[in-house]
Length: 293
Length: 293
Image (tube, rainbow over all chains, first blue to last red; front, side, top):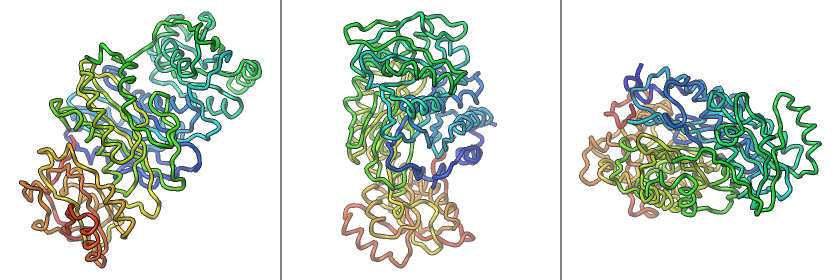
């Protein structure tokens, strides 16, 4: 069935029962606004939105459940980047009346599965018609304790740089099924002093210079130390993007202890020291990752 | 200059200095997430996103500053609907590389002007390429005191129905320059017991049945009492949509006092009693307003 035969109210009636709603939700999808009671008062409010656009980020031939998964997990990866806990999501779906109901329902199935994985409630959103490509924007709010907030700004000269997992070649499929490193990020800030952190979405070659610039330092990496995904090269590990792994900087004094604790806690997920932060003069040039326009 | 000549980072460098940032903002646009300190702890968190799509909600020939104004004011109107105070906004801009930088800068000028009007900080967002129409999604968070929250659900049989302003014909231009009724809504819930409220975005003919359905009641309106915008007919007042006026239900006992206080406080803005809520059996049928797909 095409959406144009169904109409907006009936589409919403089909989709809303699919949405995960946790405790603390007072009004959700269907009213003018989502109204929620944040469980942890006094923490910082964290906000992020992100979008996927057909023909830019995915093709209509891709499994819509995986597209939905990715649309939700991308902003959640930014929560991992700052060590925050995501709580509530709004979905904006821009789609033409020619789209099939099944496609949209499967998209929501992926959105829901991803949200549930991290106990995120989908509390509302907006649907709109378009004459062009499908676009899905997901906007997430959550919180972080002041003392556990990590940004890109706190890196110091001499810090060691770590990345989680393996880099490169994500576009062969991993980009549609990745798991944001929220659990790992929360564990890190619960146990260690992380100076600066971000998630790798545009590729190490674009993202690492952003972290260094934000911290006002330079960087030096050992390209031979990069943890390559199977079938990937150093070049693709640097510039492919869509890895959604964590890049973070910690004092070199705690390096050994961190590595040992990590391998005990996350035995299946690689943690690799790839280099360190340096004075600004020694800035190393890397081939760029992905940049829009 | 075309966006494709400029690149994403340089586009952001042009746009970010234009954004209003209020107190309580810890990291804003440019980091992985926006991190903010909500000023009023213990209140409810309110979330809303809304989008405008080229060729559906506006044409590229429209003044981009007015499009930006509308993109921000639409979700803010939903804050008025629940009597909440908007605080932080995220912008998702989906736009092709062929779009001119001037167009995008003027769009942001409108977004900024609208946000500033209600002291909303624009704290982040996302830009993406597209091969299709321009789309702008604005996601706003804010708060409301528990005792001042109004939803669509609390209408009671016998309540009188009020609308603010004048209805109909908004698409001749008013839809690009309307002012959400936040001030009026906050005043109302500060002084009166409002049982149910919403903003009129899809037209009284679509929105009033939604409010009645949510409250589990029927309604009866006097079509001759509808406050018509200049040049508008009863039919267009019911079905044009995009009025962004408040529709609300209060006990009939306070009606006179409310009307008197309103005219003193808002002498330039009409407040009109258009009918009342009834038992479900007496449900009146209205021609529909605007519905997507």
